[in-house]
Length: 451
Image (tube, rainbow, N blue to C red; front, side, top):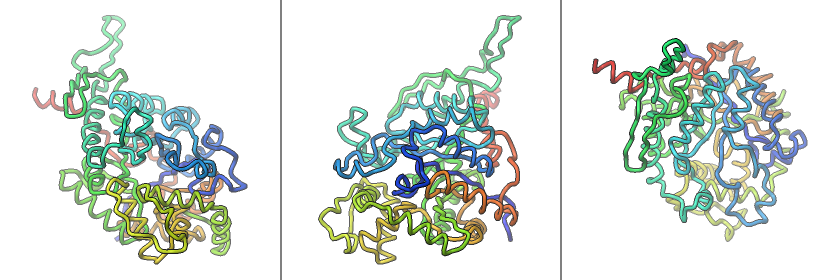
């Protein structure tokens, strides 16, 4: 039986595009990471295509910051805007598309983060979303006065409490607390003030927040970890989950498992939207698409390709291995566990050499890669959607803006023709367009129950 809901779409905006060599492509402007007009145009393309959201990832150190200078000097997209600053600017030039940014629970503080995302939600009219990460970037530690990057388990323990504190802060005020009654002189309804006064293992936060409750109640909660700890966090807190899968079967297994975990915690499975990353290279014909892909693959620098592979494998030292030999067995306990498993699996299952492995991930970084016509790409999205491998997709254009324009101009109409994607936005907020409920204020609900 066909699903009754629609495909959800995010546009994953990475300055030059997602291919490792995108910055060298002749259609990509120089240093797009610091070009507001470039991001503005990409966001407007996504909004024209009726995407649910645009999404910005983030890094708290210069990319490949731990790599030798000969690697760093050959790496594009090292510098770029801080995501919340950029999304605040984009909120003024867009009207409906959601604005989702990554922020770390390891190196931020709950009050600071809650304040910034609440502000973005008000600035945008209710379109903010927070991608919750624990930061896999070990180099970030040195930028925040720490001698070492926290262990994987410790990062997730902190993240659990961090999210709880942020939600409490967003509920510091009732929706109608700021009455601004000039006649009586009362600016705030005292019954609408809720002081979290949180005392926990990692945080002591008094509150209340000095921003009113967000328009959406809470900005949409997004999570991208696929390890066991990451899935547990997502099952408890996430409303959208970004994930990476190289096969339909893997995506289906993840989808079923995460929905079951959420149900086991008393949540409705449909309260979570699972959106795997898709890296599409689009051509009018299959041959044209393959030629496009071959052209950008040919721009891949072996030094940078090897550094990318090393980073995805937990900064594994591959310098002593033959590039045309097999990928060695690795034990990286503090790596991004899900991505280490995924990339190692790609190399093993396809019997790839080290060189072939970094070329295989140079575009999609372990996400699903599809090279073909608009119909072929729509076929794939429909198969995953109807096969309960996805509720939607995070689209990763090879280059910007052309790769996103190709998707909007050719794939979106094909999805609409099949009745799989909207023809107009359903609402004004990101929650409304995703079909997610607006959360009740936890403190107001407790007070009502007590009465």
